[in-house]
Length: 331
Ligand code: SF4
Image (cartoon, rainbow, N blue to C red; front, side, top):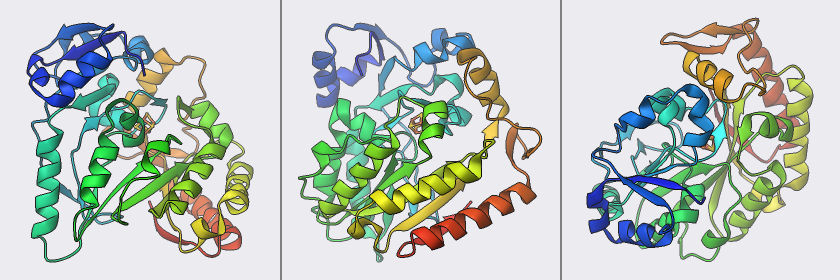
């Protein structure tokens, strides 16, 4: 990422990371702001500016540090070093929270966030797992901040607990030689290549995501796989059969053994439609009223019948082709 404009809270320059970013992006135009949560001139932009706004960088100080209980792959969702992302998946869940302001925001008070994480983990009777990547893609963020390298090594010194994060990026080189001590669970999110091309703008191709997962597994990390979000496009059975076949062929034996798979169906929303129709007028339409239904607060999900049929199909494909792995949940 090479942002032309950076909006920043001036106090961020009191932090080491803030100063490093200032040096790194010295050629960009730096615009002071009062609060990263409310940049009026960006909020009032028309939806068609969404793609351009994704190329901005916002630098602030995280004020909310509240953990949310979670019972899927982790015990807690942790607000961590960034929110938003510079890629532009048409269905991105962050758009539901941040609307068109789902650009990348970096938070420079990382010592404070890690400190809370380490203390919470150490104070617990049980081994807790912390999901640190639910607000952004930390592998992408790491290319700018090195925050993941910094976090994995420090968490590796813990005697209990795990951190985990999902990604759609293959940029794992800086992570391969870290002293992670098995305390990091790396999860790769995949979709058929045709869907990646049509709906996951700016992310890594499927083939290199699979290779990245193999490499992380070889580097001794615990790994997981997300088939997410499942999008029921016209020829979805062929696309997902091919995807699962490719995973079976290209994942290493070591990666496949005991692999835990999360399957997540797409939810879409009125806000996504409004933004995508104006920002990406030539993109595929993900809203299909013939198989989707409202789910409150302007959200849409697949109707029960289509969902059940697709779920059965996917579980059978996984069982037949990825027999050594198991499905952790389907939502
Ligand atoms: S990579 Fe993840 S965080 Fe970034 S736009 Fe896509 S879904 Fe959103």
